[in-house]
Length: 238
Image (cartoon, rainbow, N blue to C red; front, side):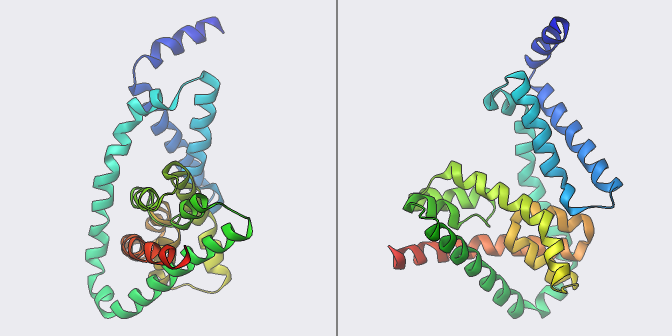
């Protein structure tokens, strides 16, 4: 045990160890996901988070120390988001023909996400800053945290809620869509992207390119609509 501790102390001095562990954990989680037939309940992101949190707690590693190496993954979020334009470009004709229906569905989804979150928070007697933090949970993290900060919420709480929403949406979204009989890939993608932003979009892309393209479009438009609608709704409420 002392030898293991000495080895870990030596390795942890190199920030790349945390990047390596994260990549290995994700590869293992992805392999498990594929082996179980892409079971949505075994989402690779969720499994990776559980593995890494367990390792960090067991080794007493702070998040700041971990992020020194993992920030390379954080950097790649930008290029990965831009890359979503590729499947969207391939589906451009379908998007153009359905533009009105797409905008109407995303507007309805954005309002539903905001109002349902506020209603649940109000019933549970949440404070004003908690309601603000909760309302933008279905928007991609950078935008959600910016909205929360501008309205007087708690950006750190918003970040946690966004991640939880994305993971739960990726896990339960396909099950819910199957249950209500929605099998059109474009419609499924719009629902996943509106409700569970980037993590839901990643899930949609692994299943079908059309679903991934429409999910990426929904994620971007929902972020824009929420940034416009949420301040107006809070102005009317408070």
